[in-house]
Amino acid sequence: MEEHSDRLDVQVSVGDQMVLVRVAGEVDIATVAAFRSALWSAPARPVLQLEMSGLRLLSAAGVRTLLAAHLRVRACGGELVLVDPSPVVARVLRVSGLHRVMPILELTSSIEAARRPVVATTDLQLAA
Image (tube, rainbow, N blue to C red; front, top):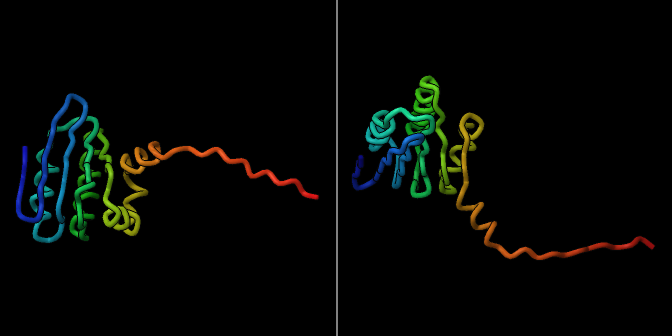
């Protein structure tokens, strides 16, 4: 399933235990209906993952839609998990308080941290 416009691209992949929704572009008043439609039409699974690394904008309308989707998924016994929000979107999630309501996985930063070389340093100073 796929929804695409000039400003929003939504792709849905369905697995046995999870639905993955990849969203890219902008979620604002002009595109929120397509965003909501994609979330509402996703089949019921224990986990709905929303991959947000390609999202450049999340407006107040998008925040309301995420909260409504979270409540809808929980009412069916599932969990909505936000994955890799872009820095701009991560800030919106923090400011709106959604980071306290639903889990956010930041896989990109975890992978980058794992790739950094570990430098063992000991900075032990003895007091004289």
